[in-house]
Length: 141
Image (cartoon, rainbow, N blue to C red; front, top):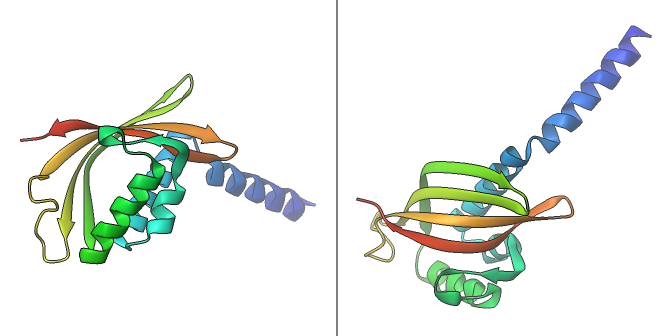
């Protein structure tokens, strides 16, 4: 009987760990997005965008997908996350990230990017977190 209870508690704790807090879920999904970009996986990266996604300069989900295809065709991208702050809001989550994008040869892409800050708005759709919008918060010194 003890073994059954122990096994049930273990399975419940594993299920709880899998779900995690909303902040942890957003961070995990963001890590998946970073991995998709570093693997030049257009489908994986764009799958995380909400259908009504709105990016910098008003680009939509389709335009973001085309942009990624163009970048990945030319070079491999590296992403270094310098800061990652997540706040759960009434209608989703707000994430502020500081990062550096590098190309396969180690150069910055595009060349004027350098260290940048972004604000990412997330929406929970079913069990998944989707990126609703990305806004540039400007360059960092």
